Image 1 (cartoon, one colour):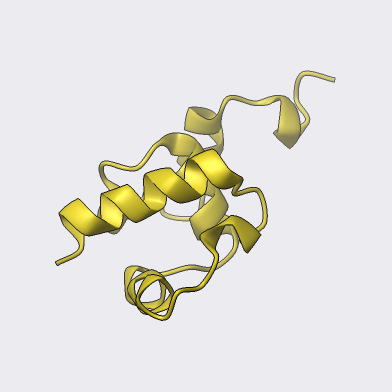
Image 2 (cartoon, helix red, strand yellow):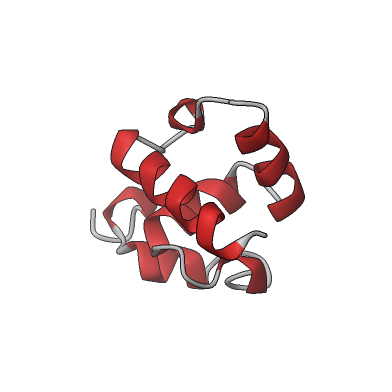
Length: 79
């Protein structure tokens, strides 16, 4: 059915998050934003995980490509 969450575009899923897109996720794709926020990640927690060498690809719904996107985004935006 087209109304199932997994059939919706990520932009729509992000808009449906409580409070919408968090300000700290600006610059991340809708897919990365949805996966992180849905799993309860915060910018502080994400920074710590990346600093500690956590495999971001182990986050639910984050594959290698999205994990690389997140790492690159952190390098540029989370100083």
